[in-house]
Amino acid sequence: MARKRTRLLRKILYVSPPLSLAALYAVFIVLGGLLFKLPVATYTPITWSEAFFTAASAVTVTGLSLFDTGMRFTPLGEAVLMGLIQLGGLGLMTFAVLVLAALRVPVGITGQIYLREELNQTSLHRIMALVKRIFQVVAVCELVGAALLAITFVPLLGWKDGLWTALFHSISAFNNAGFSTFSNGLMSFAGTPLVNVVIPVLFIIGGIGFVVIDDIARLRRWSAFSLHTKIMLTGTLALIGWGCVGFAVLEWHNPRTLADIDSTATRLWVSWFQGVTTRTAGFNTVDMAGIHDSTALMMISMMLIGGGPTSTAGGIKVTTFVVMCLATAAFFQRRTQLNAFGRSISLTEVLKVMALTAISVVICFTGVFVLAATQEGHFLDVSFEVASAFGTVGLSRGFTTELTELGRAVIVAIMFIGRVGPLTLGYFLATRSTPLVRFPEGRVHLG
Image 1: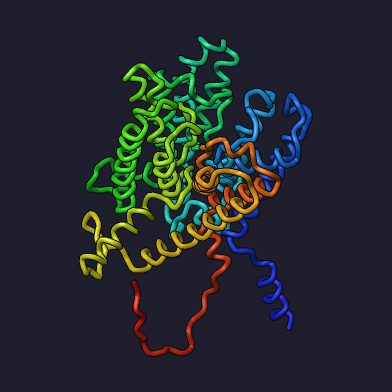
Image 2 (image 1 turned 90 degrees about the vertical axis):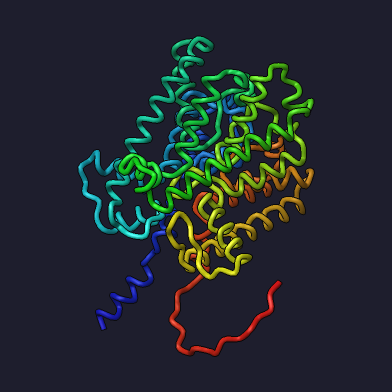
């Protein structure tokens, strides 16, 4: 009897790793909102809604903001914002391992299971080695990025403010957050080569995924890379090319964006920057409200795709998009097997892709519907905002500041789901069960 009670209690108290991680993100959003409400965090008081919205945007590394970050936050407020960005980008469980390692507290099997869930791994093998690699990459990239950005920011702002601004933007860029302390984003640096190289390199490295970085650091040969790494690298290069060329072609003669710039070199820098930032980073060197509708639609598609798994990026992920394309091609070629780079992809992975894509479409459609029904605004601006929130990108066509309290709550929910992951949501909605009865197959006419 006692054993039955113990088992029942364990079942009641058991919380799955995905649910625990989601709860952990929610806790830090609440803590961040409380810290932002402190009088020493802002120059002028902000509302509770603004505080929690900003905290959610930081923890989910989105970058959508209701006000001018640099003008509203004190250095302490910016430090809190930077800390939340770092926590959200690295992953809360990954960051916890750093703290435990510093305190020389061993990470048990339970902690490794949680890490496996957060890093999207299928086994516990090499988890701790991967975490170590993550910290090495983060430290090197953010410090080197800050040092390089300081070359531009220190002469402009002085040593103290210049170094702080360089560090803030380096952390924001690597974690694909998109927050900037400049009132107009990075528009003032549209023609500055150093900023246009360092910032994109940081968010591209942060966005391809730590598993890919680990593969590159260990194996160093294309033939030795895993299928995941090969798909990520080729998919990322293709999307970068598509984004940069597409933005240049669509916006070259737009008087509100590229046509307003006299220098051809600066136009190319802007096209490069906006072509790569769209998928996840959220920085801007032109006014997003001025882009053509066709460009906005292209950007929506890029934002929904996002970056790589186990990265600081959001979206359905590049690998999901590539596998979906391969499955579509296989269907039209009447092939029952999916192949890529000399390897096959199982039906289970295809089903995951279908589930992830379907859930993502439902989430985005619901978000657009609710906002369109409750907010005043152009439909394309609403769709752009939802895609930006779901992809944790942070770009906006000026719609963020027009959100009502309900609208802010909807965007916060979408940002949260976009960061925690649609498959995690699916984990809660689905229950595993072994069928007791097997039915004969039937035919369903599709298409």
